[in-house]
Image 1 (cartoon, rainbow, N blue to C red):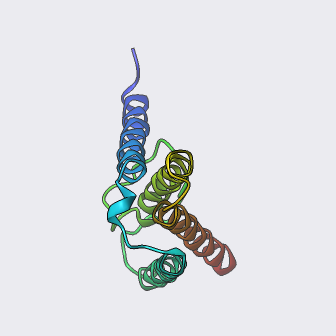
Image 2: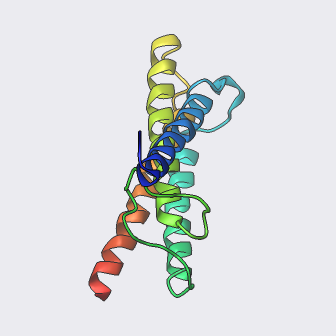
Length: 143
């Protein structure tokens, strides 16, 4: 029988898998022919998204009750967002990266075009991870 602590940590790992799967599959199987996103918009959206998230993290710096520890811990809680912002966004970023990469490959194989839509999510996921790493490096330099 599993201890309560182990069951709780397994719950968070399972929840992460479900969230990443839903986000990834939603992006990968979206009909990109319904999108008007081009490469310029893709780069703009991902760049602005990463900058805005990094700025938001900075605004949360002195907010009481925010847990900045172990943003990539697989068995720790990542919800609610305002309590665990870096963990929450790390899960979303992984889903976006997987979904973007899967959608990118799918569009290349099926049509050889319209990959900017999927690339937007791939790049946005990378921008989110960079914002998290920037936040963590800021916290390390403060100590």
